[in-house]
Every structure is written in structure tokens, then in C-alpha cells.
Length: 332
Ligand SMILES: Nc1ncnc2c1ncn2[C@@H]1O[C@H](COP(=O)(O)OP(=O)(O)O)[C@@H](O)[C@H]1O
Ligand SMILES: [Mg+2]
Image (cartoon, rainbow, N blue to C red; front, side):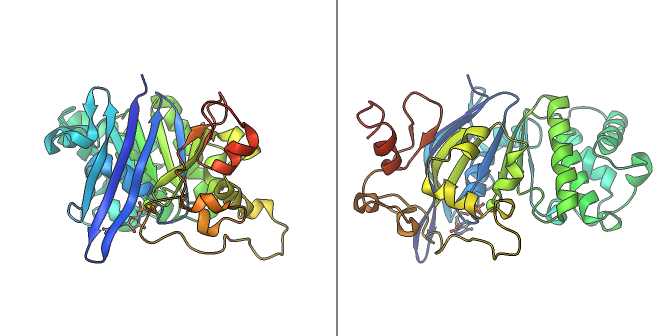
């Protein structure tokens, strides 16, 4: 049984201007110890997917329209606020993009890192202080016991993100959800933080979800990737398979816009057009309007995420299914 099993999650925003289908029928799972990359352009529903499960969406305007998210025997989407509070920050922790919003500027770093332990009653103050110092050392804060007395403004951006990671890991969670954890940091610090997260993941033996708009970030660190667009998953594969053999035109377009793949000195490829503002369309492939190889039926056919033959590689591209495995049972 997977550690986390999400089925048919729909989270929509009911706004004055209409319904935004921010997440529309998303199903995926996360195995124990596994690292799952979640990638897609900004606004495609990555954060909303995970906020839904942790009770972090503003409701209203958001509403969970359907779905289950089984974590052990708890359905995160259909449980009470107290149960979620008991899980959040203890069994499932989150790291956000901007460390300054995750840290309280008026509270000493040490106290903030101790907080999850004390809030969940996991140990006494003395033990919490010891564990906080140890995890701050582990995330690379030198002289951690003394630095615990600092306020966040005394830390650099990279150090603040390290402190936030310490806060997320101090309870030794089963799952770490890192939402664009390095987007606000410069490139060298980014690489250090990713390496650090991978190391601690292995030491703690936790599973990790790494959410990013940048395929380059997940390449070296995730076991499996899901590609999201307009509130849907368009492709899912083992990381190596995805990079070697992308099976959705959207994934290919994301790859073509990776800086490393392009000749230096040339302008960056970008995907022409923008994702739909209303989230998933009622019918058809959400990427069809921007797709250079779309068939006429892509505009209104159902485009379920289906396996390529009998592999674990899944794509929602009906054209790809037709070309690659015509006549097969799972394919269209
Ligand atoms: N508070 C909100 N009110 C209305 N719509 C929202 C709100 N938050 C998010 N959305 C919608 O949900 C979509 C998905 O957002 P999000 O999950 O944050 O994208 P991502 O994390 O992939 O960049 C956005 O494009 C936006 O249309
Ligand atoms: Mg986001």
C-alpha cells in the first residue's frame, strides 16, 4: 500500500468571475521513502493539490469537489481539522518557497525550530532544545546552539531556508512536501539546499514531494515525476524514462525550454501562449490550444492519463497512445 494515495482530487475556486478548476481529477501515489517530482508552469495547480490535503486552502473560495487522499488510514480530504493539525508539521511537513513567510520575524530561530516538537507534545523543552540544535547543525548551521538565539533577520536567505528545512524535519516526518524550496535562492545555494534535502531524506528515511516549475531541479533528485498542466496530470514516469522518452507534447515543450539543452548565446525557447486562466477546460486536452501537433479531436476528446502499453509510464496524450500502441486494451 502506498504511503499516500490520492484519487480523483478536484479543488475548484468559486470566484465572482466564475469557477476556476485549479485541480481537476488528479490521482497519484507516493511510496515510502520515494521522492516524487511535481513539475509544471506556474499556475497549473501544483500548490493547490498539496494545500488541499493539508487543509491549507482558503475555503471559500476554494472547495474540495471530489477525491480521497489516504495517508495510512486517514483520508486527508475528508477528515476533521483537529486530525489534520495532528498530522501537519508532525507526520507530513511542508517547506515553502519564501523562507521569510514561513518564519516569524519576531521569534528566535531556536524557538521556531523547537515549536513543532512542543506543539505536538513530542518531548519536553530541554529535549526539544537539544533536538533543534542537532537538526540545525545537520542542515549546515554552524555553531547552532548559539545561532538559535538569533532572530531570522540575522540569517542570509540560504540560511533562512536551511532553518525552515530544520523546522520541517525536526519531527522526523514520514513525508516532506517541498514547494519550490529553492526558487527564491541563487543558483549555487539552490544546489546546496537540494543536496542537503536529499541527504536528510535518506537519513530520516522519509518520502519527499518536490514541487517546482523547473524540470532541471528535479532531474537529479526525484525517483518519479508527474507533469501537471491546467489542473491535470498530463504525464507520469520514472525520472530517467521521462527525460529519455517524454510522451506528452507539453513535457517535450518543458524540456525544450530547459537552459542546459539550448545552445549558449541563443535566446531561451519558451512555450508560446499561456496556460488557461480558468484551470482545466470542461472538455478536451488542456494543452491542445498551445500544442503544435494537436489533432482536431484533441480539442474535445476525453484525455485520461493512461499507461503506455503495460508500463508504469502514463500519458494523457491521445495522439501518442494512437501512434505508439494502437489497438492495445488500455490505449485509445
Ligand atoms: N485564492 C485563490 N483564489 C482564486 N483562485 C486561486 C487562488 N489560489 C489559486 N488559485 C487558482 O489556482 C490555480 C493554481 O494555483 P497554484 O496551485 O498555486 O499553481 P502552481 O503552484 O502550480 O503555480 C491558479 O492559476 C489560480 O487560478
Ligand atoms: Mg505553487
